[in-house]
Image (cartoon, rainbow, N blue to C red; front, side, top):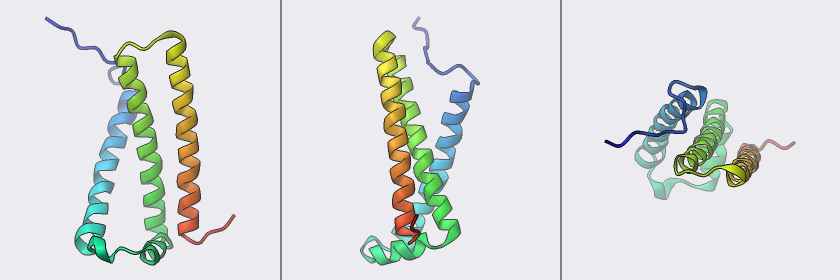
Length: 122
């Protein structure tokens, strides 16, 4: 009989965060589809409309949270998938810090883009 292996410690922090971020992403993705595919059809979504939506505080915060949550969820998921496949030693450390760097760069870009789309300059 095969044994189940996971790099997540059952009920650990990374395990919990992966599930919480997944639940948040499902809810916000449903909101996105409803708003931008059913209420407004794809052909009606414009750059100016996006700028207008991003100037609304609630929408702005939701979209920034969506981007940052998706970044964490993706980076954490890729890292744990590689650990589950058996990566260890130096390769594990390189992947870990490479993903942390990529995640941080993506997070900075998400915030920068969101601020520009909202018309906020630093």
